Length: 321
Image (cartoon, rainbow, N blue to C red; front, side, top):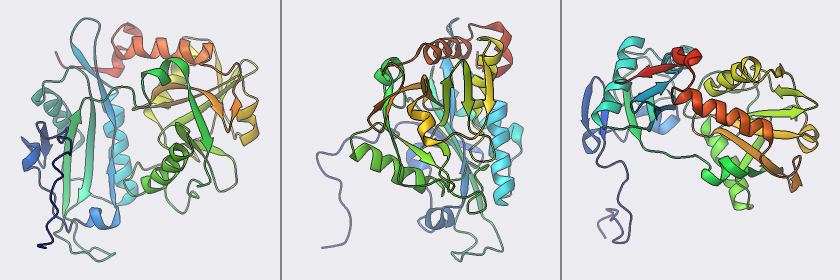
């Protein structure tokens, strides 16, 4: 044997293979966007990324949702992690736009990422950072499936806890921390559920494996405070929508596990998941055991906004026309 890994003849084609990628200032073919095997980030997980969506608008064009806020959070993540970004915010925003246009997407999911190459060695402590920046994009439909958006999902409270605030700084959207999410998600799916809900180290509700969580009971919305969760851009958006468009009061408070079970509604939010209702948690029906009215109304309002249907929120859209 030569030790070379061969592709199976029955393997599926790489869905990214034909795409264009922005990397370190240039648009290149995906196959040419080489990452060195001794990338420090590959070995140790130090890096930061964003997930952004571009939607086809009702007038037939395309618009990126809350681009400024996403790039702002990317730079905040890098600041927390002490990763100096070799491009300014305007350059990264332009890179995102160029990547979408180069791929001729009407709708897509966009992934900017800042990571460390192989120029500084492979020790834990680096004196010199070899910083790389890339932006990729691909078509990605409903993260948990179209049926999930309509009918809600089944979730399981995970045996894996979210990090203590001083174990891993959760205000940063960093690459390495998602091992925790992968383990929780795998556990939930292998047990027959769609998603994992994670508690913090005090046993209080934190977030899902890749989404923020909201609870509706007695006419009020509750969501865990930012001290324990990633500051989601969609989270921020739906709070504004619920308060300004739906007349709901949103309280940022601690939530216990059993509060989930007796809630009228539970739903998840995130760039990938958008607004996804939860119909069951730990084999207990939530409310009527189906997607709730508040979640579905919020979902409708959210999709109207991201597709340019509500002029009050035009500030959230970067038009690509």
